[in-house]
Image 1 (cartoon, rainbow, N blue to C red):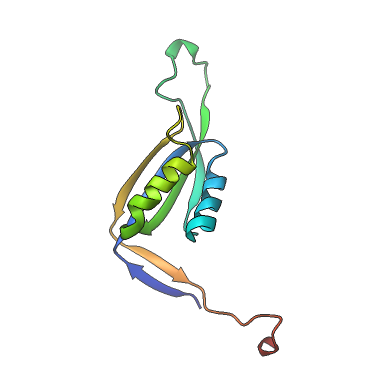
Image 2: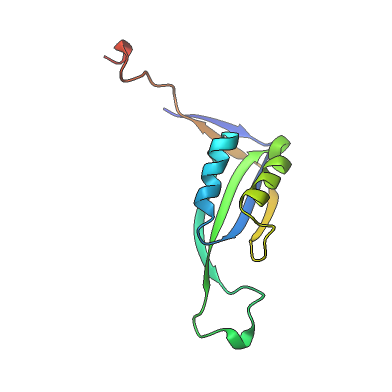
Length: 121
C-alpha cells in the first residue's frame, strides 16, 4: 500500500504555455531536478493581443496548462528554471505564476524487490 504524507510548506507553480511546450518542460524537471510531480492539460481561448477584426467565428488557440507542486524553499529557483526552460521570455511565450498551497499530499510507493534478484522468487 502507498505511504501518504501530508505537507504544508509547498507552492503551486502554474504556466499557460503555447501548444507543444509542456511535455518537454515536464521531462526537463525530472531530468535536471528530480521533480516528477508536474502535470499538464489543455485549454482553448483567444489571446488578449488578438485583434478583434482578425478573429473569426470559433477561432481559438490551443494552450497547455502545466502545474507542479514544489517545496516552498525551492519554489523561486524552480519558477526561474521553468520560465527560461519554457522560453517564456520570448514574445507570446505564455504566463507563469505561483500560489500557496495550504496542504498537499505526498504519496510514496513502497520499495519493491528487484524482479531479477533471488529475493523476488
